[in-house]
Image (cartoon, rainbow, N blue to C red):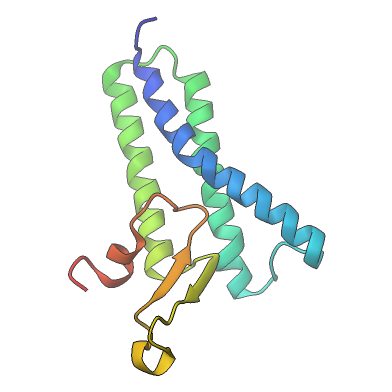
Length: 141
């Protein structure tokens, strides 16, 4: 089998497949338990629906490109994939910078008065592959 330019889109498919599986699992659980996925307010929109759309776009767009760009050159495919990566990384940075995480909590090894807000954690279903601490606080923060 020969590697063709279109095969680069498999990276996007494989990168967002776990996101879509996480969203699918937790969506079914939330709908089953709470009878809804998220609230229809600003919080639900920014923390549930936009990240869900990002996961779906991140997964479906490469699938479409695998189908539609079979005859594209390395140059066209490379530029298209670079554009896709730029949009995905910008979307991730904006989402993470505003802390639109799906699950979060604190660990207090020495108690909440001593540790404060130091030992918090977040789970981003869509952006699981992004080092969120770098974006939330800057690389030096």
